Length: 177
Image (cartoon, rainbow, N blue to C red; front, side, top):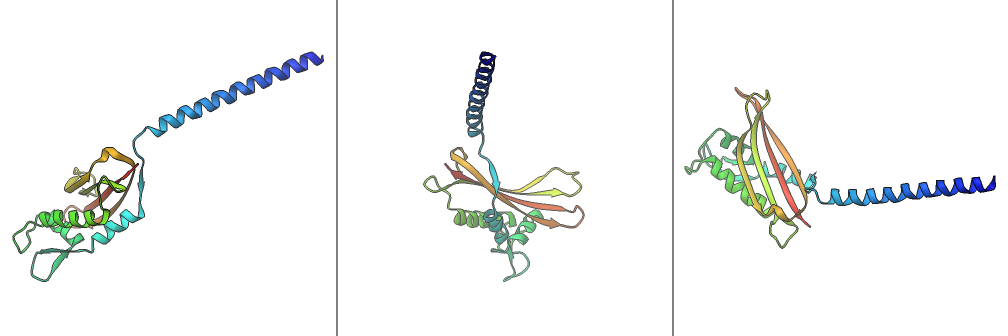
């Protein structure tokens, strides 16, 4: 009777060892599979705060009279409405140069620093969802192939009128490995 108990105990120990070995191999396989995927995008409070602050930055575009220069939020609306600045430059041109300057100086993107690239997109989306998204401005700088991780943030501006909707500003930043 003692031999039967010992044999049963040895079989249970062997079975437990097989389960442990298979589990460890499965975890190693999973870690390799997860580690090779696309960079995971994370919301960043700093990026969202940068976008919020940029809405209050005063541009060099005045639509009606000087010194009534548009801030970032009003400049986006003026671009959406296809308005022209008093210096005959289109509001979208002023928006492009203003955002390039703001984002470029704030993020310091280059291969030698941690911020490898960024992508900014500003688009209109109607609240009813009947119309397709309309891209107002799209900017990018750097090389996204060197991403170790990706952080991002967004800001929205409500638009009223005939077709109420939102203008969304989204910024994604590629961080180095």
